[in-house]
Length: 294
Image (cartoon, rainbow, N blue to C red):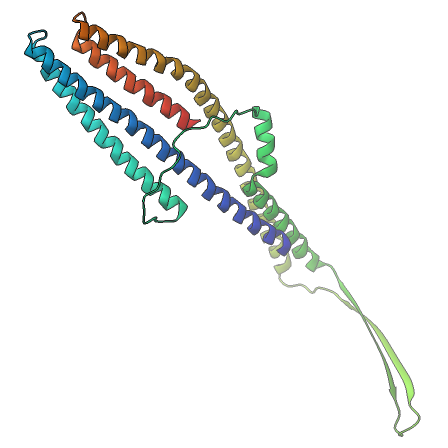
């Protein structure tokens, strides 16, 4: 029982270690996401500033109405608000990452904020098989079940008689010499007496603890199986969104380019430019979210 409990504790250490690693990786990806979103919002501010200058120039020569200048100022203000929020999220994500790592760097540092897209080749059945074989919390729960089984056996063994043997060999005499050998041997059988059903109570208690450990294992298996299925579907969902958003980003970039050209040529409206800029930012942020989720 003790060896099984030691094994369970060792697996608990592995579980804690794995959780720390996952927390650090998740915080790192969140920081990467925040950095990329802030970059998109910064580009939106730069674009809005350029559009405001353009609108003022067009208004000064009577090419557009004053409302275009006003709309440009509103667009720039909104873009600045979004950028302020994004930069605040960067700071929060950075602090969260440092807390997950357990360090407080005194100087500045730069992280690689380019998402890598490793190919996920597991099938759901394969992922489930690997999980059952490698998740340390499952191994710890199994070890605790085995430990409680041993405690049940030990408690029930108190009902059995205890047989012990003893023996001795000595040399002795009342005179200095000679010495005569003497030996003795014995066999003892100890029978458990009635203890007011105390042994039965101990057996019942050990069995209840074993049943509780088995129930915890069963619940954990179901929880882990659900977690794996949900995560597997989430990975596939993010994978599909990455492919879909790639096309959306390309179309949004082209649409903004055309809207800006048409506005500069006097055949488009500033509203079209604003809508195209918002659509572009949303498309890029949606893709960033998909990459981070994956």
